[in-house]
Amino acid sequence: MDLGLKGKQVFVTGAGRGIGLAVARAFAREGADVAIGARSADQIKQEADKITADFGVRALGLPMDVTVPEDLEKARLSIEKAFGGVDILINNAGTGTEETILESPDEKWYAVWDLHVMAAVRTARAFAPYMIKRGAGVILNTSSICARQPLGYEPIYNVTKAALSMLGKCLSEELIKHNIRVNTISPGLILTPDWWKTAGILSKDKGITPEDFLDGIAKDNAPIKRFGTPEELAETYLFLASDKASYCVGSTYYVDGGWLRVVE
Image 1 (cartoon, rainbow, N blue to C red):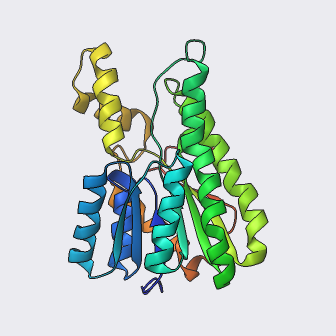
Image 2 (cartoon, helix red, strand yellow):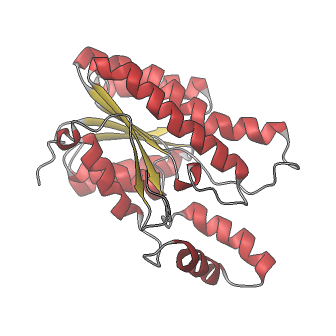
């Protein structure tokens, strides 16, 4: 299916690895130019070069921390110089957490709030004006099934991802008059480096291997009995960013192998 993404200009945050990188590569495969942002300068530039070599599109690697407004402004100026703006913004930067509410200091709450919520606010302010000028655009936010069905060991992650989902809903109503569609994607069990990090921490307390921990998580929670891959998930981003999804506005889409146990 031709999704009509060839020649589109896309900015993906948190794209040095995992979901963000898989999404960026999927757009490049479809012929879109991509700007990718992440904190590791060497890694993000290497991945951008590899995207260009693999797919023949323009790829811009931007070393940046989305929680630092000055970094975002530098990224905006670089994208404006290279692409003139963007058609599609993917707010993907984020991380899992592990804590209890009673023992977590304010500083940790603020830091994760800044990463999951305020970064998306700032990128919308920075890049929606280009979409308004072009007469159309798409913003996709990466939330989580945990925004609706939380895991008990990461309350800060659960709360901030729920806020990000609500941000997407509010932003969609504000921007649809400009023909900018905003939607949220809430993955379930996607096997990313963060999951391996979490497994390494929590498996020690249980006296099992990280592999056994992840296998147990999948079997206990997902009817499909396995983790999904970032590449599988990336296909949903392509569809929702395309004109094939022209009537999809302000919604949350769960890609979770059947984990969510309610009907909406």
